[in-house]
Length: 216
Image (cartoon, rainbow, N blue to C red; front, side, top):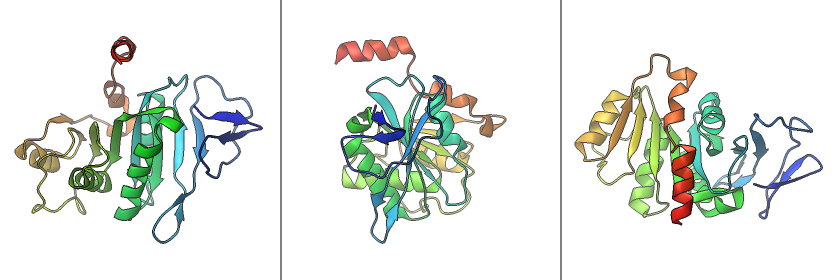
């Protein structure tokens, strides 16, 4: 966890912090900070969120949202599933991959475990997972893909073999393609995907977490 001084989130690496929304954050509210990352054409400003009562070595998710999308799913991953979440609104593939690679490089400085990195979102998250496979970096523990899978998803001609295991929510066409390519797929069809109750099953229980820590 970064240290908080005078209402600003600070860490061991340089980034532009913003004042926290509250002087004293309640224990059940996530802690947020904004970063400034250099992209090919400009700086982008992702948001990093830490879950309430975050443990050092928490899993990390990079949530890639469309420019006009909300970040409700990213908040659910943080608060309900216990992920440190780097959330970014972008339509640019190169910016998305830079964010994923940056998160892998700096996860430990954010209090997260780089070996438990997940990429989440829709078409850009699917494309970023393919890029990670092609480049051999970063190693993704999982991809969380949220439909509908309408347009802009990786082309039907693209090979999906060897990508990270996937949890696919309301995107049956892409789930079928992953499964056909031999990828491990968990498919979810929640009645109301936007209530995000399903995120609670994405990480181990506290007992499993403690056992994992003891094995390290």
